[in-house]
Image 1 (cartoon, rainbow, N blue to C red):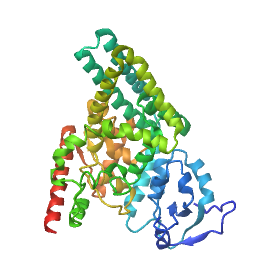
Image 2 (image 1 turned 120 degrees about the vertical axis):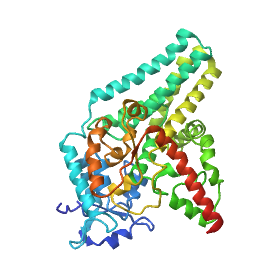
Image 3 (image 1 turned 135 degrees about the vertical axis):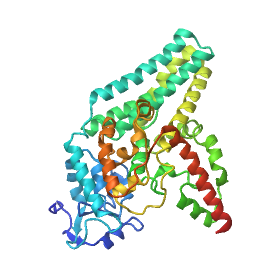
Image 4 (image 1 turned 30 degrees about the vertical axis):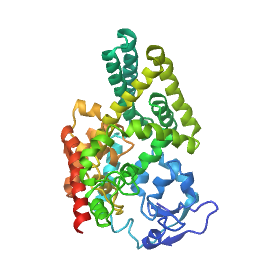
Length: 440
């Protein structure tokens, strides 16, 4: 692309990769490269709509592929980028760093163009409408169960199971809107995202955006992916980090038993004992009043519909039972694709390698697709985060071919095997930590 001169910016200069790499945020300056153009994002990070951290994770690096992956209206975004432009890479400089596979990157970009030409980035709105309706019907069925059959043990438990299903499935649906994968404009995606995560789930959209986009930008990269922040204070994750922790003689928990205590502090506890309380701290501390208003509508609706049937104590019991059941569902599904995979510090490898080494799939079936919100196609979702989920299975063969050509492992496994691999990987990394702690 021809260089565009900022309206009131400095004269454009040529830069080397060494100069860009020095502006990685360790000092005050942060630069990044998109399509060979060099941008100074030092002051912009605080105003970045996707959050300051997600863009800062690419400071000192080429960010062309994540830029393309995350933005649905690139033309509009580029207009705002002009004021940040300070130059471009020198003609003799390669388009990206030597740590990245040029042939793989070029072929993936060709694949991306093919996918767009095939229309796989366009959503089927009927699919998402029916998905939303099935959630709302389950929500109504949960209330009717108590209204029709009373509040004895069996109807109460059935109601809790139905509401847990509502919460889990609404979690997958808000994920679609949060990734801007349903509508062609950000405005409509954001509005429906607020409705689903705020009104149907009682959680803040800004909190989800803050965490989840970082995860997608640098999955399984320590100190950049918040999804692995339980390392090292609760778990020792991944072979490399676990050995590193052992050599440093650090022991915050008995990690060699983490595959056992995972069943206590992992699936059952994450939502009811942590997320449920942290989300309120998050919105108040960051003054996200719009999010708080949406969240309030969820709790008001819950109170008005269930207190007449159960009373306050009964509603609290139902609510935390639902959060407990949902938490188990959520943790097993979200961790099966990542915890068993490669976990390390950021090595600044190319987009495809970054995503493939940190993700794996679970076999396609009608149940697996529904149960996981199509996150059984985690590889495709990470490569194309704005792609509508109903198209993952269509692009999967193309991704498999690309991986086979470049000798990249494309993992897909049965659902129960994926669950078991979480425990197996925790046991392995715990033992690696112990060996390093005692003998290295």
